[in-house]
Image 1 (tube, protein in one colour):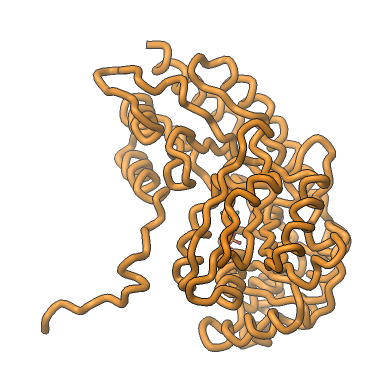
Image 2 (cartoon, rainbow, N blue to C red; image 1 turned 60 degrees about the vertical axis):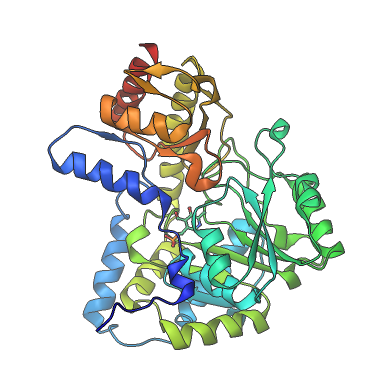
Length: 397
Ligand SMILES: Cc1ncc(COP(=O)(O)O)c(C=O)c1O
């Protein structure tokens, strides 16, 4: 048989750009090398015990069969209650869809809202998955460059510059992966008015909404007048409850869109794992102290890492307001030669740090900004300190 021809949609699909470095890091670790891995996109904590126990109990009760495609009625009620408590969002069960992780919720939403040729406004830096999902839907990615004078926060003027006649929607991610930036209330209000003026839908990825620091509470764009009708809110249990492997995310929005997304899900993946749904139910309904404890620990590491980065010549960072990443500006290192390697962009520095310093960060090229790196602080304080020492030592040479 001659070689099989791939469909255009997957032939053009970029592999995750963070994967190459991740694979290299893991290969080095498996060879026995002591690499400090600062690339993690998931909490380093265990899923709280009561959540794991709830899953085991559900399994032993026989909750091992198909459930309703879009999630059990009880889980939808729990999602509804949590959205209300955390963000003041009011959604009925028929306005909620539970999927296999927030990434899957996003995929369902983007495929349901984007027609071939539709423009989707995407602020830069972006989480690596958004542009590929937009392209898979046949949409046109319209990058929105953020004016750096606002500390990395998206403003309506950035969107105005990027708007095109075929723009149909905006993807918001606050707090942001990779920058940790949070869009403040005033900016959100202006963005909401912009969306209304230009008849744009909004997909608001609020997966890091529980990980905001300095006592700030999450504000959802769906709470502004007229926005509920044109917004799909995305959230899930992965980051807030250290449940990345369980694969439970959810979407809330107008019932017609949620129904279309559920139809899509019914013909592709069906219901998310019944056992994981039971675990998510316990997470959402149970005691929330573990979320606060995790946030306090992340906050401690955040402040430490920011002060360390700010003291390393050539590196700069804005204090992130949420999530668990530092978005490190390495422009001050460009043009230098360290150990016979010329640094022209963040990819070179990431490779130098990994191969010569045994410390791994993700270069910003995959997030649309090749002169930044993403440093995760989802690792212990000791490893974080060791990683920062190694980064600093190489730059001092
Ligand atoms: C911004 C953002 N959205 C969505 C996700 C996906 O979350 P989940 O693991 O629930 O699919 C991630 C995970 O890295 C993320 O960073």
